[in-house]
Length: 449
Image (cartoon, rainbow, N blue to C red; front, top):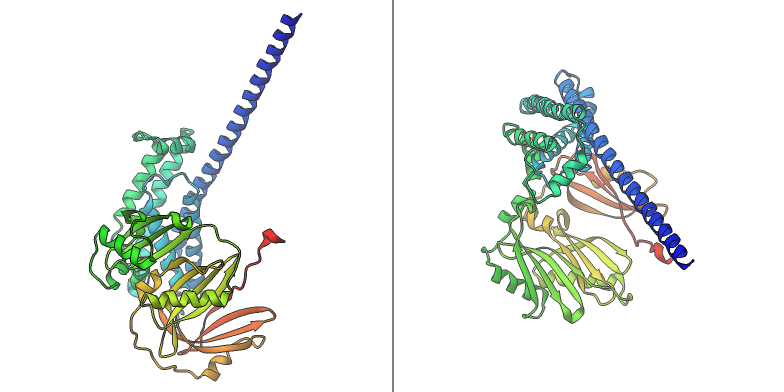
């Protein structure tokens, strides 16, 4: 009797285990099928968007009407954004595909900056038309290579999950058709050095590279960088510090440091320039306690921190509170004019006033003494461009970067509509509305509602 019960129980256990294993297998297969479907969708949409991109660039070459050229180039910008999004959904993070992504990004930047320009005032130049012709040629080549990969995927029922496994494997994948096809595309793009993107796009791409040229000081060793960081952060000399050189993807020459500070149970990560050991960004990781200081007190601590480290003539352009953290943007001020490209961002913990975060790449890259022009238009003419619903609270002059990445002098007006605050920039030379920003306030903590 007992034996029969045991046999029955064992049988039930075997059946249950088998059923559980079967369900696990089904669920795993469902996840894999869903992932494969998403990869296939993204890949075929990438082909569709690159096809449409090539066609749209081609159509711009035949246009003579500036009224039609601007929306056509705006559509090129949209299609490059869609194509970049498709690439981001494919399992290519472990495979070098950065040249193609950079090429798509540059097409987007070039087309956007021409599209938003007043083409009556500044028509398409011969160099820009030549660039469009080369972009069309290269887009056609990329389209054809991707179509070859697409044909092989369809004809041979190739799976993207095999690509993911091949890339994740420590063994080098020599014969994966999809990987080989994408490597061919990227290798081909690497040879597109004849494209003249123009000074605006080139300037954007060189922003981080310029960092190393603009900062002052001699090149420092790892030990000298450690000592500079210890002094800068005022931490114990025996603190545990790991240091490495930043990789090529960082875009600038710097040291990355990781510091463990058992004294206050925190860790600090930061990058400093190899030239002069200037901090580029700092992030402190620790548990923030109950708020004990106000946002105004935190702002004073942030300002004192900048002055202590010889970053002077800075004024707060924006401040906000996120949970128990004060976040401040400071900009350089020259002759009572706010220079917005020279910005520094500081985060302050509201429990004890610690500097919890710092970022200064804009300041390090752009900061210089400028020859500032006089406004060509009056303050009253600029004010007349503001929406009548805006109640002006503050005003002044400021230098910003416009959509063409040019520094322009503007009248800036801070005003409110209902309970919302806005900052509006009106070009002081031609009265164009350059930028409208909605200002952030204190973020609601939804966990407490």
